[in-house]
Image (tube, rainbow, N blue to C red):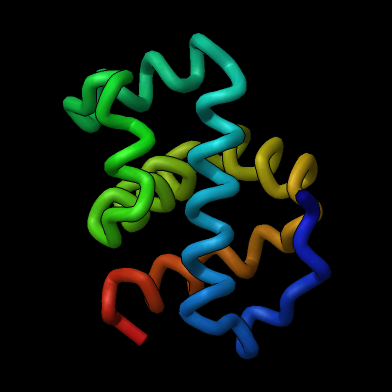
Length: 97
């Protein structure tokens, strides 16, 4: 599901959670991407669904996306999200906003 273009200054907590879940779905769609992510987060593939609703895990997902510009841009292009929106989404989820 593609999100409508979001203005970074108008992202709600629900939008931020949706972005994080979409990013996780993007990672899960590719065995190599998800394998590296799981390895770095120490998460077991069987835990992925349960962890998806965890706010800290959502923050970790966006941290991971923000750490790799090419991955971030590929995700944003596929999801129809302005890359500039990821930072504010991360800030909202991590309580920095």
